[in-house]
Picture 1 (cartoon, one colour):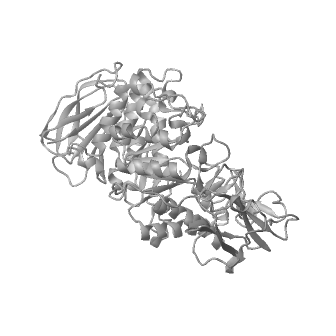
Picture 2 (cartoon, helix red, strand yellow; picture 1 turned 180 degrees about the vertical axis):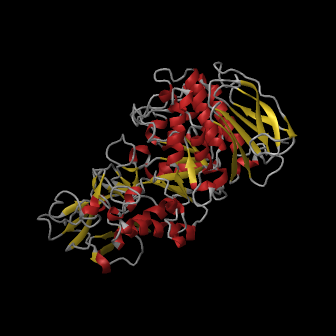
Picture 3 (cartoon, helix red, strand yellow; picture 1 turned 30 degrees about the horizontal axis):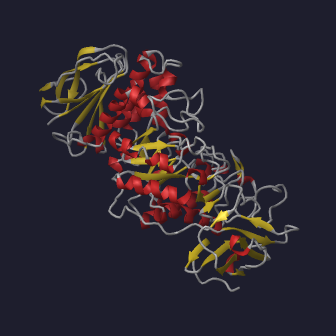
Length: 605
C-alpha cells in the first residue's frame, strides 16, 4: 500500500476510508489493525515516509472503528500493539483507539472570547462537579452543561476545566494523562466536550482547558518505549518520546517528554493548537510549568534548567499569538516569575497570565490566622499592588484552587478558619472578606467550584459537590453574585475594577483596616474605593481618604444580614466627601461605617 498524500497525524477519515499516520523511527514495519480488517496484524501495512513517519490510506475504514498500530522493531521479539499517540478517542485508557468523527455542527459562530479585564473564572473538575446517577455516580460534560445557567446567573463568564485527557480509570484529578489528544471517555469523549464548549459559548462563557505537558502518564501509557527502544535502566519506561537521562526525572516518575526532539515538540504543539482551533477553547492553562523549564521546578537553579522546555513554551505561545492572539494562555508556575509572562521577543515565555502564588498564599494565611494581631496589612498591601511586567492582568488571583483545597491539612478556606464549624460566624465572615479582596484587586479573579455557596471540608475527586448548600446558603451565593457583577461593571458604576490602576492609600496595621483606590480612566462611575476591615471590631464612623469630593454611594457592604443571618448588619451610609488632609494622601475624606471582618465598596454616580 502506498503512503498517503493527505496531511495530518493519527486517524483521519475521508470519503470512503481513513488515513493513518504514525511516527515510529526505529520500526522495520508498521501495520494498522482494527475492526475494519478483523484485527489482522498484516492486512494494512503502512509505507515508510521521511523522518521516521509511516502512513497509508485504508479504504473501508470509518468513523467508530477501533484500531491499533502493529510495530515490528529490532528491539522486541514480537510485534508491538500500540495505541495511536494522536488518538482523538479511546474505549478506555488501556483499551483501543477509536476513529473519531472530525465533523461537528457548531452553534457558536457569533461568539467572541471576553476581554481579559472582564473575565471571571470558575475552576471545575468534571467528575466531581455534579454526578449523573445513571452513569456510576460520576460527573460528565453533560452534567456540567446542566448547571451552566446557574453559572451565568452567578455572573461567571469563563470556566477553567481541569485536565480531562484520557486518564487511567474513571476517578482522577486528570493530571496523569495517558493520551493527551483523546478526551476522557467516561466524561463523554470528544462530542461530549464539544457539547460543553458549544453550550458555554451560547451562554457567553469562555472555556479554558487544562493541559499537562510537564510529564505524561505514568500509567496506561503506550508512549513508553513506543517502538521498543529505551536505554539501559529504562526497561519499562523512556523511549523516543521522553528524555532518557537525568532530565527525565519528575515528581511523577521518569516521564518528562523530550522537549528537544523535533517530533515531540511538534506533538505537544499540535495538541495545544487542537484544543484552541478544532475544539474551540478560549485558552489553556499549562500545568506546573516550573517542571517544564527546570528538572526540580525551581527558580534560580541553572544547573537543573531545561532550556528545551523554555524554548518549547516560547514556540507554542508564539504560534498561538500569531494565530489567535485574543486567547488566554495561563501558566501555573507558582513562583511569581515575571519571565513567564514577559513577551517572547524580550526573552520571556510568552504566557498571557499566570497563577499568582504570593497572592493566594498571603491572603489565605491572613484570613486563616486565629488572632487579629497576626494579620499584617503590609502583607495585604503588597499582594494588592503586585503585578508582573507592569500588567495587572498577567496574574490570576484566588483563594481556592484544586491544589489549595485537596488535603485535610490544606482544605477549603472556611474549614481552615473554623475546623468543624465551617458554616459558623468567623468562617463565613472571613472567607467572604477574602472573596471581596479577590474581586476588587487588580488581576483576573477566579473561584473554585462550590466556593460560591461555602463548600467546606477538603475537595476530593471522588465526592460530588454538596449542591444543597446552594439553597441553604443562598445568601452567601448572592454575596458572590453581587461581587462578580461589580467586578464586571454590570451596572456601569464600577468601571475602575476592570482597570489596571490601584493606589493602596490607607494602611492601618493597628486597627487592621486597609483601603485602596481603583480606576480605569477616572471620574464618576469609574473611580472605586474599597475599604477592608480585617478585625473583629466594627466602626460606626471610620475616616478614609477619597479621590473626589461630593456624594459617594455604598455599592456593597459584606456585613448586610441579607447575605447571612449571622452577619452584623452594621450600617454603612452613602458618605459625603469633603476637602481636607486625611493622613493618607487623598484630597478628600469621609466617614464610613464598617462592620467586623467586612468590605465596603464605594463609587460615585
